[in-house]
Amino acid sequence: MLATSLIRPAPGPDLKWDLLLFCIAGYLLTSVGRVHQLFPVLEALRPAILTGLLAIVIYLVDRREERRANLLWVRTTKYLLALLIWMVLSVPGSLVRGTSFDLVFDDFVKTALMFLVVAGAVRGPRDVERLAVVYLIAATVYAGVVITRFDVGSGDDWRLGHLYYYDANDFATFAVTAMPFGLYFLHAGRGTLARVLAAVALATLTLAFVRTGSRGGFVALVAVTGFVVLRYTGIALRWRIAATALVTVVVLGTASDQYWKQMSTILSDADYNRTDESGRLQIWSRGMGYMFQYPILGVGPENFKAAEGMLSPFSDRQQFGIGVRWNAPHNSYVQTGAELGLPGLAIFVGMIASAFAALRRSSRREHARARAGETRPQLAQALTASLIGFAVGAFFLSLAYSQLLYTLIALAVGLQKATSVQERLIRTS
Image (cartoon, rainbow, N blue to C red; front, side, top):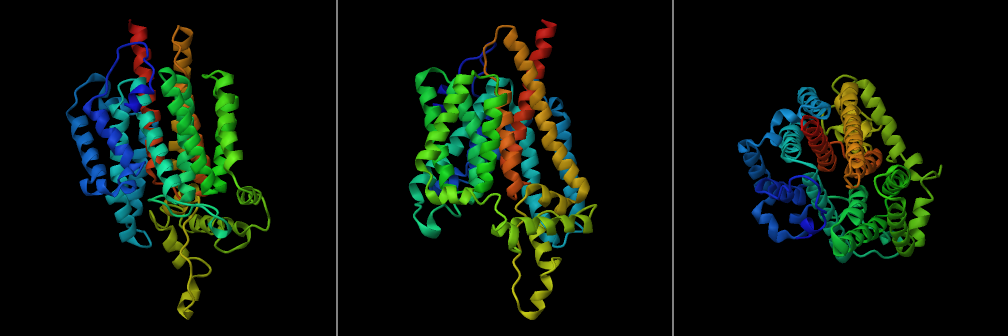
């Protein structure tokens, strides 16, 4: 299997794939990778529901010490549960209660539950590697399908538009969050074949990324590249430069003149995002207004669009028969602040910051083990790069409740748990 061949054996007991990990892998392939929408024959099987329910049941009956639920009671988990509670409290006062109720109880409750199962299923760093492989495969398969099924041309058709579930901008951020895993396995893969497959994954993701023409994704890629080159010290500089060169060559070799023209408008004062009432800066400004108009509980989960139609300075046009665009927030932080109020925004930012802190602690433990003779590359740093990609990309997208984020922070918590348990075992041995 590709997921097995990419992983190099690690010191310590060799914990094999088990049924719980297989179920979680299936869940990630569907909830994040959307493979059931790429290949509609799978949709009739309802794979996300099936694998998710099986994973929950198996986790609940698993009595292994390393999978005890109390090991998950860390800061990131507390923030996530606080966010869920705050969302529930925000529902009654929502502008459109039905929309908020559906998001919270039909969607986000499941997301929070699967966060606990994914993080709880991790028995050691090898399991985090396995799930990182699944994440990379999911993104690569999605990219491959996008490349083969969606053509780009000239004029207005020079870039991808709406795809399966994700639009082009969302997918660009998804691809950027997967690229650090490609780099990790380019170095940590077992044998030449595994490293070649990792290189192919990186090239495929980059090619699809270029076709999205996403400016927010480009900014996220620059941020991740900067971290990889300057701070990803767990991998030798030559490997970091080689991976960066691979991505650069694919970008330069496939990007059209229209692509670079689009990227050149990122800081342009004439760009529609600055001048148009439906441009991002104008939407963000109004979103800040909703945030301070409803500072405690916000306008309600998933109600930003409703606020645009009901509270914006343009909403009065509707009584004269003039249409008003109910815009998405296009910024996960503005989205959270407007929909959940200032406390909700503080919880959301605290959750992401705590995941970065958890990865920093895991990185220090990995460094300590490396000094003791272990040669494992820095998995914590790969996850950090992925989370940076999301945190930057989310500044331009409405991804506050996205599976992308909660999968990455679940892996961060799982790695924190695994390295903490390893550290305690070493101290007591």
